[in-house]
Amino acid sequence: MAIEISSESQIDINHHFRVSAGPGAGKTHWLSLHVSHVLKDSNRLGKMGKVACLSYTNVGADTLMGRMCEDRNRVLSCTIHSFFYAYIVKPYLHFIAEEEGFNMKLLIGEDDRFLSDYNTIKKVIDAVRQPYADHNLVLSAIKSAKWKLLNDGRIINNAYPPKKCSYKIKATLRDEAYAIYKKQAWAKGYMHYDDVLYFSYKLMQKYPFIGRTLAIQFPYVFVDEFQDTNPIQAKIIKMLGDKGAIVGVIGDYAQSIYGFLGADPNQFVSFTLDGLRDYTIQDNRRSTNEIIDLLNVIRTEFQQHPIRNEHGMKPLLLVGELMACYDEAQRIASDEVHALSYRNIEANILKQRVNAHVQDSRILNQITDSNSDRKEFVTTWVKAIEHARNKQFGAAFKMLENVGVMDIDAYTSVKEALDDYDRYCNGTLKDFFDYLYEHWELSKLKPNTSIYSFYSLHTYRELSQCVGLMEDTSAQRTVHKAKGDEFDNVFVIFTEEKTLKFLLNPDIRNSESDRVYYVAMSRARNRLFLTVPSLSTKVEEKLRYLPIDIRKI
Image 1: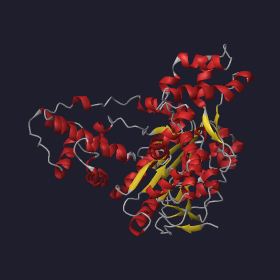
Image 2: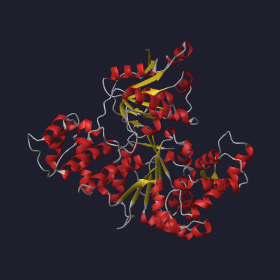
Image 3: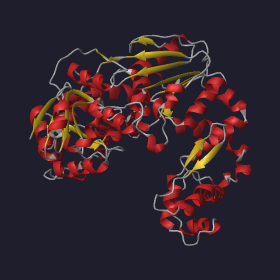
Image 4: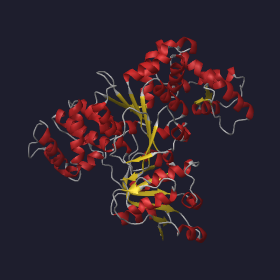
């Protein structure tokens, strides 16, 4: 039976744990506090030991980094893949390189160029005796392949040839082509992203000392968003726990939406280690009571408690043409509304229509500041702040290091700039320059000069719109790209009436599409809008029993 805790609770630092936490529970905050307790109280770390905080995505890793930077020397925050590559594959691959046919001398680190090589694909086709096979079909099959962990502990390729392939070609591709391709790629030193898992697993399995060594380097290994892991990743993490590391996993099976990348929510539910303790955080610190009410109707086995305890408008289902419904949502919210869709196509259509009237505001190249150092410092700070606002802290800190803001100063300064964001975000570039001038030694802007006029006539927001973020951070994007974020106003797109089955008959446990919509709705802090093109009387009557309002546009 899981013990219920809050995001402020402290647990025993010397036991394996699993923390189940719903959306908006404050699990990243809890993990950062737990890490602080470990650093303060643990006698396992010694002088050199570090805490490894791992996440499935770069955004997740950056978010953790942003919360823990005051202890950067004792905490490693990175993706699971990065951790495996840096601490398992890179130092130990030479042990099995010869038997696997991997050319260490030519290690390049990716195989996209190799994959696109026509001659390589032709060799694969010829080798499996399918001379008339469509090269594009073979290429698609190889690109879709993933390593798969079997119940007996063996690891095999799991290619998925396109449906239009003949059965013969499918069987041939599945059984032979991928292995042939990999051997050719490895012989040239190419390593695909997914190969990191293959080699990590093989090394950990064959050489137990690697796990013991890692447990000394990292006596504590914590994995956030564990529901996004695949069986191979989960198995390697378990191996680390078996070899002496204290392992903690944090996640929520209901937010597992990366099945197409091999993620399996059961990895979180079934994860076990000797002495593992179960905890649950059922708080919701993000949303209004009305939004939580709807989330609790959809997910009855996990009832969240409202911590904000603030009332707002009921979730509103808008029925009608997409753009008209989006405009209505913006009118009601009187603020930016983030539209989230299941597929890229709806996000892109809405993005194009919303931004069709927006003038190009890319002004970076228009800044004619004769003081190049000043120009670089100001523009770098804008980029760093905007990346940090989108939880890309690693990128933000690296940018600032390039202009002389180092390590702990970068963390402290970025945190302060985010806290002060309202002071300058709606002002001119001159206002932003004055803000920086308060904290850093900069050359003054001389009045009655062209650069002074430029800074006075253009706004911070104009310049911030020029920042090329590494992730899609627009107000119109897919649910997958928005995972981990939260917004005041959320607009969830249902493309047709039948997709509303998610509201009427949800199956969070078994349906990934239902989990996608659940994640989308749970991003909302204050207002939640849903939209569908049309609604039959029958379905409308059923929806009336839910804690939502319906409005036809």
